[in-house]
Structures are given as structure tokens and as C-alpha cells.
Image 1 (tube, helix red, strand yellow):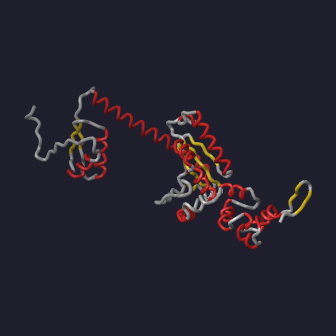
Image 2 (spheres, rainbow, N blue to C red; image 1 turned 180 degrees about the horizontal axis):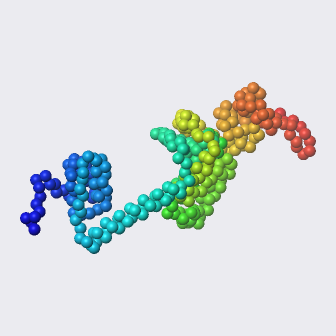
Image 3 (cartoon, rainbow, N blue to C red; image 1 turned 60 degrees about the vertical axis):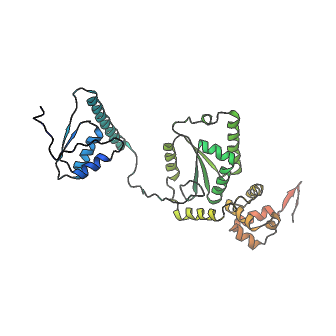
Length: 319
């Protein structure tokens, strides 16, 4: 038998480790063989030889395999081939059934710096802060979520906190909050957060896939956000970080929010410009017009601040 077969002088016997999947491909490109004999048959090795043949079509490659018929190795190889066929069939079927448009603009803007206000800017008015369940609990305890919500409310009309669960977790607080007391405190903090920020919206998502669908619905038929505007917001927060929001008294902020004509942006202009409420109420009309930026808002504020007021059935102006 040995007299019938022998190794030629150009034959390479190579053992390729499975830990380096690219070693076999690199070897084929370097050696440029015309015949390949696989002693230990794996489907990945066969596909690598096919890729090599496609890369060098001028070289005709003959592939030989050695295995025992009806052996474990043969059955393992056939199972791998069957799984591959099923995977391609499933992919073709799902691609045909997908309701995805191919004419969408697939451009993605990536800011290498940290976004100081929100995690996602979906539209010019919608900003989303994304929280995993454990991150939500920690942020509520530390007060970090309060500051994040404050910044979003300052710069965007519709601030959103997205609470995203993992696909492996139950869609419930009980999965993470073992103690009933901790669960009540977390829910209480979440309720207080929505009371402090009436504009804030909460979204619940059972998985990252559901989050993508929510984002698609929120962006439907709405204008695209401006990267330049988002960067301006980030630069503004970096410039005033630690001073622009934390220095304001929360009670004063909530009082101003209750006044007619005072919007989310206007209240911060008021607190930066006036030292006391008395200075605000006694300010000149032209100064108030510059602060409120419209005649209607200024008129609403003056009506509430300077009367006339009704007290016990009698009307009298309050100086």
C-alpha cells in the first residue's frame, strides 16, 4: 500500500488550530495550493477553501476529505451542513417578509464626546435618557436622574426617560427589587420625579428590540434632529457644568413654573438675571419684554404679578 502512495516534494502537512480561525485562510493565500486534503473535516474549513477559490478564480482547487462512512465525524459534518441550510432558508424567508423600506437615509451621526443632555436626540424636540433597571435604581438613589431630567427639561420640549428591561429579565420591578421597602421607595422617587417635572415622559421597554420599535414610532413623520444644535447644547452644559443648574433653588424654580407666561427656558433666564422675586416684579416693562421674548407672555405675567387681585370679594391692586 505504501508503494502506491507517497508525498511529493511540494506537499505541505499543516496543523491549523481552531483558536485562530484566520490561520487557515492566511496559509491558503500564502501557499496557493491546487489540491487540499482535509483529514479532520469541518464545515468552516470547507467554506474557507471555497472563499479562497473565489479570491483566485484562475487557480483550480481540488478539495479532498478523509472520513469514515457512518461515523460520528460524518454525522457531525452533515448536521452542520443541515443547520447552515436552515439558517439561509430562515434568512431568506424573514427578508422577504420584512416591512422595511430600502430608501431610508442610513446616515448615522456619531459624537466622539459625551452627550451631556440625554442619550438619544430623536427629533429637535424629543430627548431620551435611557436607563437599565439597575441604573435607574442607582440614579434615583443618588439624585443623578433628577439632574439629568432638569437638563433635558431646560433644552427640549419633550424629555423622555426610557426604562429598558433585559430580554432575560421579567418585565417587572420585582426582578431587581427584592425588598418590598426598596421597591416602594424606588416607585415613590419615580413618582416624585414626574411631579417635579410635569413635562417628563416615561417609556417602558421589555427589550432592546422593543426600544428600537419605540424610537421608530417617535421619529415617524417628524423632522430629523440637527447635529449642530445637539453639539451646541453639549458645549453649553460643559461650559456651565456645576453652576448653571445646581445653583438654583428648586423651590424657587417650581414657584416660577407656576406663574403665567413663564416657560421652561424663561425661568432660567429670570433666575440668572434677577437676584430676588421683588426685583422681578418691579422690573421695567422693556426689561421684562427682553426676558419673556413676547408681548403675550409678558402680559400674562404682569396680570398675575401686579393685579388687580380679588380678596374676600373686594378688588384692590397690589403694589
